Length: 481
Image (cartoon, rainbow, N blue to C red; front, side, top):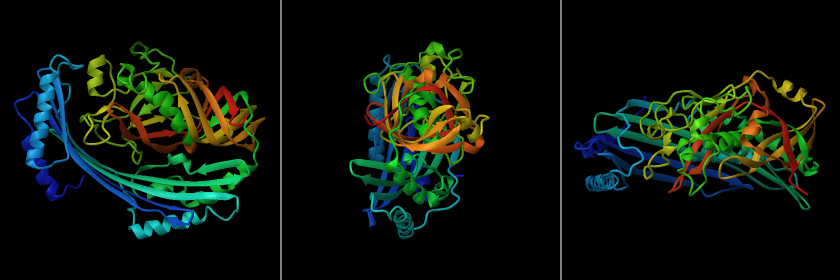
């Protein structure tokens, strides 16, 4: 159960009182985001940062028109002015909205992230970061090292003019670690999952991916990369570790399946999608091994929630099953607009943005292969982990990704370390070449902190989970000529 202070109870009453009752639908979404960031770099404690962002957005549907009004002025006068803005826009858009009736409902419910190990005070956290940062040194070839931690708490309250009430609290944790080594003209980086090892909860988030033991391993690997040859080029098998699967899922499944993008809403900014509405139910997006779920109900995953920002209840849903495309990621408004079933993924980055179709927890489900089997069945290939670069076209179709760390696979054995490993492909072709999916032992729950989309821009946090996966006949190349 969420814990609501007396002051918030009083403010909630004021919000409800501000909602107009003479319109078809009205809601108020109050959001408070508190954030703190701590870091240590090259033995020096960095300036700490903290933030508090708070405001309210009112939404009004009436006579086929839709309007928004947002404010950080939480006085009665400020709330009233924002309601007036929403009324004006609702009146101005009558006959011009993408849907002509309000599809939203008056939902009631609560959610809060479970925290098993609460964070300590600032002094305690800085000492912890100093300890792990010190483990990144010890070799003269190491020229830069850093460890940081971000803590974000988000409280949201959605109330409607007919009794709807959704209160949610998310506790998010973002650990990062990086070491850079140099030898002449060769500089290599190794990071703690490239920022992917984030999640909801407390300090137990650091335990999920071995933060306490990460520094010595990163040092060993960055020095290996200095001495390693460039990744070979050619068509071969590719095995991706979960922390690289994060980006592969995000860019070549997540964004293409956002329904507003499919309907053309991102045309001016980040493109469209190669997916079209007629593909759902029949299109072979990947091999029969590919099963992808939209699941905001996974405990501890970065975008876990019980309701989206329009109040739609969240539930686990297959988007791709046995390789066949089943449904898009479209929230209530987009579902009405397209006459397609979707999911509860109307999400806003803050109080001053309206919800749009966004990824939440988007996961590749575990398969049946052990880590050993995924490698043993490869005659010639490369294992890659941790993203370092990405590029994908505006229809989310052709892509090129680079990784920090690679190892050759020769005759079913992991052999030499290689540096600057890259690969390219076409989304559906790549997923149709999925030839092996790891079992639950390699399944890892991760996240992305900076997914951007929308006009005006919205940066949200999304979750991805995946096992180790293998792909056949992939164009692999080194990052050096």
